[in-house]
Length: 87
Image 1 (tube, rainbow, N blue to C red):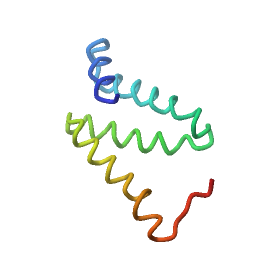
Image 2: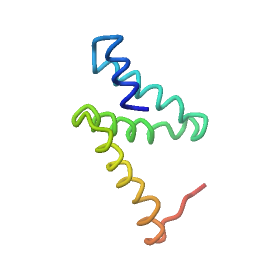
Image 3: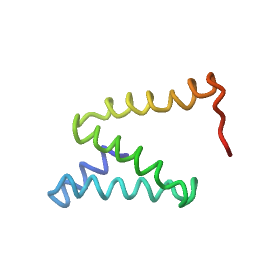
């Protein structure tokens, strides 16, 4: 989603930073129904990080590897340390 949105919006606006901001806003808005407005910081920070990785590397594989690394903390390391969800 991120790479496609940023590239298409850049073609429309001519401004990569604006395209990235719009794509990030859409990503965050898509997560609000699932996580609620109170948990908005997580998709802002996470989405912002992956947006910056994409802008820096222009490589979706780099974003996917970074996403896998971040998710690994929650899926593998946290349970091994006894950290569980508060939900």
